[in-house]
Figure 1 (cartoon, rainbow, N blue to C red):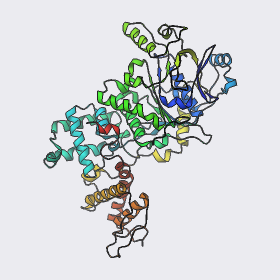
Figure 2: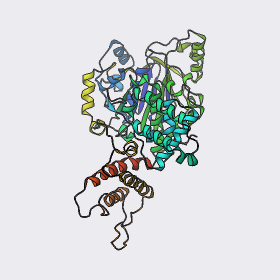
Figure 3: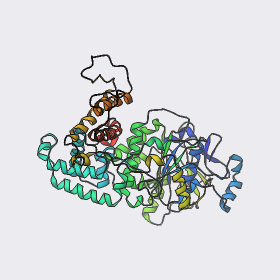
Figure 4: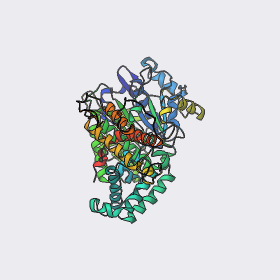
Amino acid sequence: MYAEDKILIGCNENVNVSLSPKLANRHGLIAGATGTGKTITLKTLAESFSDLGVPVFLADMKGDISGLAKLGSETEKIKTNVEKYHLAEMGFKYQAYPVEFWDLFGAKGLPIRVTLSEMGPVLLSKILNLSEAQQGVLNIIFRVADEESLLIIDLKDLKAMINHVVENKDKYESQYGAIAEKSANTILRSLLTLEDQGGNDFFGEPALDLNDFMKVDDNGKGIINILDAQKLSLSPEIYSTFLLWMLSELFENLPEVGDMDKPKFVFFFDEAHLLFDDMPEEFAKKVEQIVRLIRSKGVGLYFISQSPADIPDDILAQLGNRVQHALHAYTPKDQKAVKVAAETFRPNPEFSTADVISELGIGQALVSVLDEKGVPGIVEKVDIVPPQSYIGAIDDTMRSELINLSELKPKYGEAVDGLSAYEMLLEKIDSNPNIESEVAAVDKEIIEEVKAQEPAPEVVPEAPQQEAPAQGAESVLGDLLGTVLGGGQPAGGKKTKKSAQQKMVEKAATQAMNTAAREVTKGIMRGIFGQMK
């Protein structure tokens, strides 16, 4: 609950524990055993950030977070806490929140799609559980695609590229190194498994623009983006890799903003252990680097898991705001987890932190937040502030209505299968035997123009040379396309009737412009994870 420039997290008889918005980008942790109230805490924080005008992203693992979109209703426990801690006087009221539903499979939300070119070989290797040798072959395949301007958008593009590189390995091995057919075949088999897990739905276009996650509604409330993860949780590699991709994209693309009065965006990682289980050391270092630096870009990260022990120490040390629900100490392993959790808090002389962790009731938690100087506060035992939205899941009818009303549905609702590596390599467009080279030329010229970001020279041979006026990148691309598609005539010149061949090239070039302009800013490195060898 957001009140008086503070995010109220919990209360007891003596103190209200609140988080300062300007320290919310110092990241946080929500931990506790199943059924102890982590979801309630997640919803309460998401509501507070929304009230503050901060967009939020979170995953809904069980379906019950969808209740954020529905007006809350009174229960006996909520009524008791509202009266006990005078929450109504601080602005507590039942309300619904602006929600955007997303689903990697497109069933319970707007479809989320990512191009394989954007994902890159490193993160894709994580999904496919490839060995180092197999990852090396995949790196070569992506490098060839980059060099030859063959866009790898979806799985059929990648399979076509694998076959192309293997069939022409004599041509490529002298430049890129050995290309083992056995490794290539293993990758192809892994792609079949990925297809069975829904990869054909996830990889494609229109690709997700993360700016669409960072919006507010007409009343200034931050949109709460809910990723339906009930089915996705059955494919933990896809789930964890998608979140890593999102984190990398935010880090790479958001500008530095320094210290802000409130976060620009808040990202909740539910089931955080799925991110770190069996994570290679080099991956963990990259994640640690992002967590350390991304707060300067106005992003707050909150990890949700059963125990702090699920989070690597280097990352745990950066999570300054902590909410610890109950942990059970039935076994020696459980007892060790309780001890680890207790040691992450600044002690309170009034009680033993380790003892209290095992005694907390549902909806109670130990909470410590950073003070105005950025120092962790003394841990307090509190009742978590109840959500103002509905506790539980909404029905499918309401969900469908909200999805249909979304202003983003026209943008993401339907998949687009444009010209990419599959079509070019298999020569599906056969009206012109030279169309492959023409489209590749368009793609390469577009990339060069975007890189240069300079005025385009006059390309009509017959015209006398004149100094070109200053143009923006969009105008440069427009003139380039007008020249190529118009048979040497710049955009804006006299229109002529296009042949079928020209229309084919135009379609290809438009697709190339939309995708290549985005890809050129990434290059082969593809963000921070692309720098891994």
